[in-house]
Amino acid sequence: MCQASGLLATPNCAGQTITDWFTAGTAPTRPDDWYHPIRVCTTDGLLATPDIPASLTTTKTFVVYPPGYPEDMKDKNNPQPPTQNCQLFTETIPPTLTLAQTPQADGSVLVTATATDDEAIKEVDFTLDGASKPVRLTQGPFTFLIKGASGSTHTLHVQAYDYNPANAPAAQTITVTLP
Image (cartoon, rainbow, N blue to C red; front, side, top):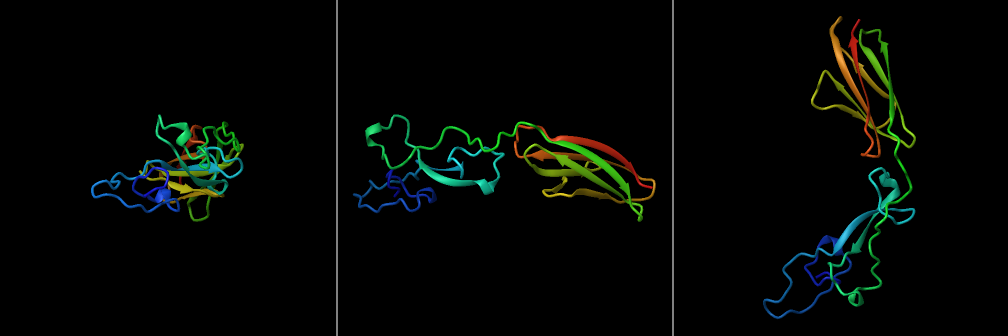
């Protein structure tokens, strides 16, 4: 069972379990819900926001006592989870996007997306002719090749995202007619 809660052990309390004897019918049956894995910044130990790259975060397990649990019974060696966000990134500026078209010798058109952001670009999505699933690129160069019959017209919708989900993506739609 988990040491702090006395409830059935779960993966969250691994390394902090104990074995005990119980009278028939008194063993814990409820899985532990006191141990919580929480994503924190490696720089200051505060809560990691979604815009913090995984390379700058770690997951720590904290014991979260239930409401009303007596203070004098809490283990002082178990720090409480952070309540403030890490300030490593303060991503508030949405990305920008520009598109360029370059006709190719084979009759296709190469579309290059230049995506910029004050912090970092997470991904650029290309959606051709209303396709249900975009082509997603997570590293530059952000290019997309449009092929088809000569004279055919295609619509390409491009969106650039940064690491802050609160920021709207930069979006542009262009129409391309193949030579």
